[in-house]
Image (tube, rainbow, N blue to C red; front, side):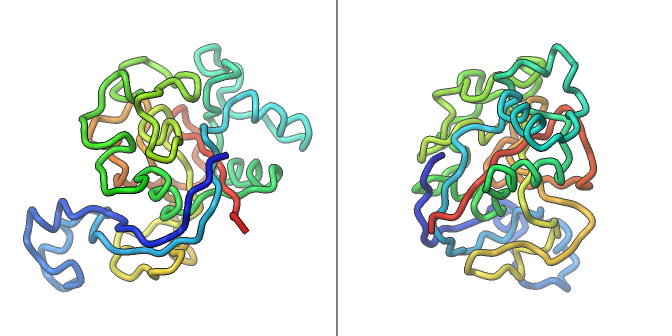
Length: 238
């Protein structure tokens, strides 16, 4: 696991705010719907934590299946997806949560995930400002499937975390609400208390370039099991 120091950082994006030039807190403004769920950019203060250096791989998940007598993922027998080194896919949010708990860890919050991806300075991608390409990330269906975890040395974050952009999108702990950033707590935000969708971060192997930016937010019903979503775990530093 990789240690991520605590502290204050700016979460989210200013992109849409600059495009439409409006006050992000004005929820009655008819142009408010033009803001994406990445806005507004806002400061958050998180405690230090540890995060998996790599996405959970099939080999890791097999240990959980055997030890906990857990059902196999949806695509476990697909030869395109079941290499032991590939990230596990075909798992629901609950499957991911149970794996992390079995491993005495938990799913990251959105704020933790973005901090690990952003590193020590404001950047657009985990590796910096250069646009994504095949040396940095698995995206845009360039490789036709998820690749073994840790395949992109040039794409790791400032803290040394791999595959935060592309390969598989990652389940996180939070319920999704598009307007949550307007009302988010500054200290260790945990997302809404309930919802219909869980947040998914990071883009995946079929994502277009814009969707592998580290501020990009996606969401899904927690029961979905597809070829695009995986996860990684975190644990508290204290």
